[in-house]
Image (tube, rainbow, N blue to C red; front, side, top):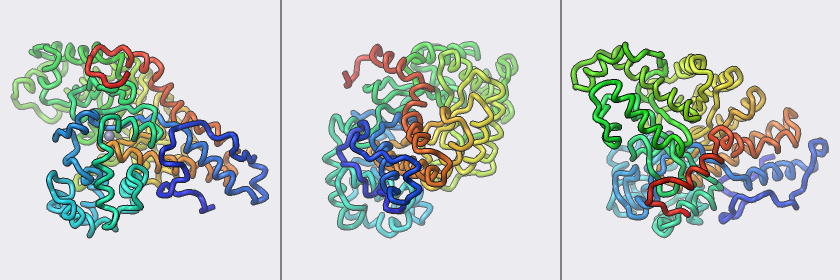
Length: 482
Ligand SMILES: [Zn+2]
């Protein structure tokens, strides 16, 4: 059974666009499996369905394509060369493996000779090239630039491939043609609250409620609105403004508050925080308990506005990006804390991101128990591909299949989405064939799951038909897609 294709050696042609499976694929039933003659064919069949099925990508941090093409620093990409491919996620594995800040500065810095970049990478690359983060880079390099692996002999060709690819239209090429992604849901790290994107159909945007409920610079999200914030009531008006202006176009709201605190948001009434909010607004001291109460109150204010607007609430749960700062004891409280949120607002759809790795088993229990919990595998396939395949197998045997989202690249450099999508497809096919082989699923059980898992669930949960219609009527005028 290990003759199955590896994502590093894709069976699919590189220029393949998501398309229906070829009718010529042999269709063997589960009964045929017993004779042992068609094992490869059944695996191939599942792999082919998964390869040719498009993803709705539920989470990215992609900057606008124009800022990549023009190359402006400050949009999350630290250099305009092949070093950029090592600047997100795999950089954390490299640091954990022993790379020094000086070496990282050379690898990902601007205006550093290519040979110096390779000299910084080479001593550490062998330790991370097999991790999900490392494999995403290798697969992207192969699929986008046609280079065999990342090595001293290919680094220059990679650098050339990088330069040649970054041109107007390359987002479409990478996302739709290579990664097989129909649309993304972007949390723009370089925008305040919401980005008026130049590509509203390809790069759908989430409203970042993180910017609205965590503070303490309450005037930052108010600046664009023109509202002069003198008290909490004014600030509620700021939140209302963002939802009134962008709720119809946004796919969801998102908060990564879990990087800075527990998710134990209490439903604190406005009158309890009005006075400490005034003090914080004026820059006067507030206690930790008061800060928490203000954040809690504003979190629920945002959640209610999101729910009125039909927007799911995405919450970061689990593992922290970066290295050297993750308090795992706090991360471990995420599953318990979100149960209380699910109980407090049964009409809100909460999308629990990143399978709360490494507490992914608890997320299966949550999806099984709470009608308003959706689990999102965004980021998961590169964090730990093997744990993600195990999670998917286990989830499908326990929790309703309509509440699982299977792909979000979670990248800043778009190129790496191609690597991540390939790993995800391999993992999805692997999980389904493993369940088939162990007799837990029939062939039709497995094949019927592919469309909903890869895009159908996302279409329904985020009402993407409505969002596409809205995207065609956006009022801003710097659009580049028709
Ligand atoms: Zn993210």
